Length: 226
Ligand code: SF4
Ligand code: SF4
Image: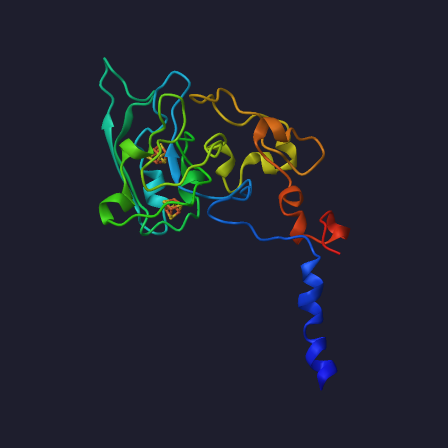
């Protein structure tokens, strides 16, 4: 009986000497997965024009019915987007959004993409419904930070292209091929990392999962768990 009793502590005692895998969240954040789907942004071209053309495809495809778009003809003297129309009203209801990224897939102009920010909470329905003013990137191409969002330094750097669920960069025939149009604040983005060794993680903001989660992955698969 005593040996069973003390034997029960063996596992706990052994863990004292193992490397710590806990992080003091939210004081300290771990790097996020490259394809994490966070809160959306509406992107702009390098010349500042909005990419959204008000086509409503994103609203049509959304399974949670949480996007509301209204398009309007571009004023000939002051066009907002390069298309015939632009997104006059654009709203996303985050009380409904399931971050599936179907809207990102459907968008023909790469106007809507997702950042990696999931640390946002609100205390009113009005705050939960993001307006176009809140979603459109700022004059440097970065997401506008809302008071209820927890952005840390550098978190908004790689904020658009890579949040697609099935980017062509994931298919071997597109490896190394630039697929993104020029973007305010970022210019032409480097191709997304593919499956082979031919990758430039520094340029794309990607990283191998084993490099950030080594403590959770067995040694035989490149991690540090024995
Ligand atoms: S991520 Fe999915 S649920 Fe959220 S707005 Fe886009 S399509 Fe709708
Ligand atoms: S975000 Fe894209 S899919 Fe949605 S209305 Fe604008 S252009 Fe169309």
